[in-house]
Image (cartoon, rainbow, N blue to C red):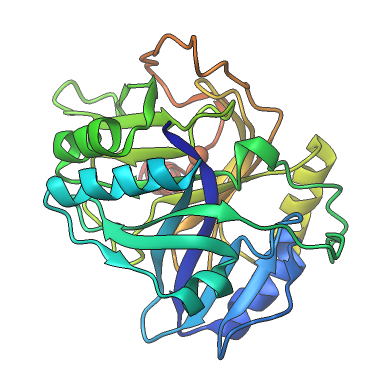
Length: 309
Ligand SMILES: [Fe+2]
């Protein structure tokens, strides 16, 4: 048995208030109760939390936490990760209770990105109600969404996620972001867990930034949900990282905006849902069918326009 889904994320921040405003007022997630000292928890659905935000001196993704289907598979995974030479630290019983799981351990991938793996999940009886009126976040069997991490040692990390952890290949492209024939391009691996979400993790061949993440993705129920979130972003003056667009590989419609940690949050809907058992991996040439104009592309265009004046 492989990885079930992305369960939750752990984020450290020196800007607790900014994250609170961002998550509740712009994204539209719900504050959760039962928070351990100093930590703020936020819900997307009936899971006790999906965002664990803890005070720190840095702003970074501490861990993307993935659920493993049962305790035996979880123990086998831990053995494989130890055998692969990665550091493993068991979470304490109190920590596991606070995370709403039976047990978990912490580790890192070969680029140093933080991961947690857990088994035994829980559900809250208090209904989820979005404070911003989001009709629903699409989770269920497909989990919280996806995480995209930076891996300068791309092949080593790809092998770790595939052979050690047990994610499956969905799309293995090399993207070129310029017309320069000398552009070496950038390796990407979009990988699925044992569910219909096109990818629950993706890795990109780029240096690890201080925020330790490229982006997290949340799926909303409808296109109107995505559009209204885009409006809230604009009104709250949150920087837009990429305009509305549709991806080629997972066909998700949506946009990207900056989080208080500096990495992006992709808000999308209407994705391709795959049959992971029969999926034949693809290798697409471009990330987007239309749209998704990145802020750095707009800045370069503006500069060119100025130079031409
Ligand atoms: Fe994404």
